[in-house]
Image (tube, rainbow, N blue to C red; front, side, top):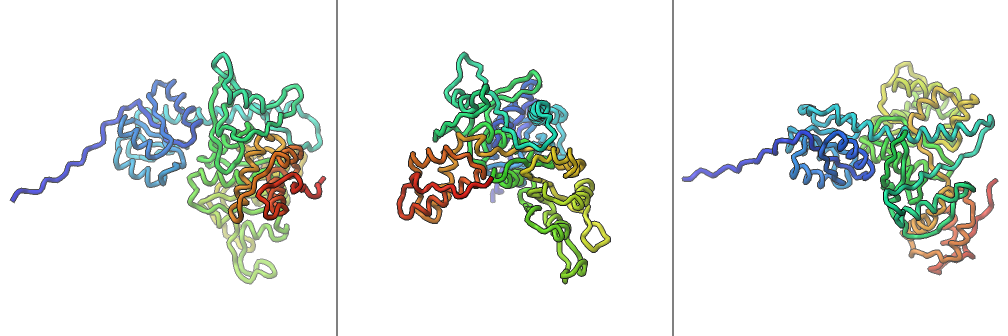
Length: 460
């Protein structure tokens, strides 16, 4: 009897030490990191999904693979585990610089970490420089309304701008007047080339917008870019912007793109809970801690352990409670109301406010030490008047959303013209409600006209 041959498992090819694969759905991140590694004499291959990264690794046997915190087609943990088994000699890193294969440290690990830091810190430094420039020109002592986000200028390496670049430049408006131009054109490109300056270094790249954030204007693309940069990190984030501009959507996107996406996302509105109950709501309480506390309860912070805690309207938090929150932010320990023991909790804090919190910290109505710990990384959500070119996309998005439970209605040109003339003090949330009201007023008609566009009572 002939023995049954045992199939031979082909070993993974020996890695090429200065070849790297970058796996990320974020094209701008891939381009930045690829440029830095190329300057360091690496051969770089880009992959926009986990499956594509696997194929590149099979074809090129890279010495290093850098994987973003989220893959559009594969579970990240399963991908990393399978990849380690198939390519045990490859230096495997996440986009946050965390080794995913401790048994294999490549000879050029420090170069990889340097490239990751440079590709991320360059954009942060550019933004901070722009913010400092804006602050230096405004020295009034009183509280001010939100300034418009400065749109990044469009650059081109050729003798003339391409069509998409010219369109983006037109949308930025007239620099002399400071007023953006309203161009209600549907079908704008998903990505618009923008330029970011870091010292004397100028790089042209494209930014992929997040699916949660509707709009292709430079202001909205800047929000998407900053979310993608900071999401993989543990860095605290402060989201500032006017009411109704989508701050909670940004917080949810930060959680979705982070390594904590499978853990809880817990949101609490600091302005919606009475001051007397807010401490117990945040930190929890023991039985009998106060009148009506018939049993103990875990607070919102503790329930977010391992995940993300979203503190909406943090500017409304009482000063007395801010000091207790500061203690938690510093040491990740909390004390329930009525308890003497401390509890260790691991959460990432994302806060949001419609107030210019730096001004409030300066005049003493918000604790400055807490502000500096929450505002390690700033994201500003623009008001709708700052990106009017996105109005047609937003209208289409909300009409499709309203059409889930009823036939989809269409907004005719006269109604769109009326929408374009409104100043939108309630921002995107107001637009959604105006369109819902219009769809109801239209009744069985499939077309929404200017007659059904009712802005209601204005709030001054």
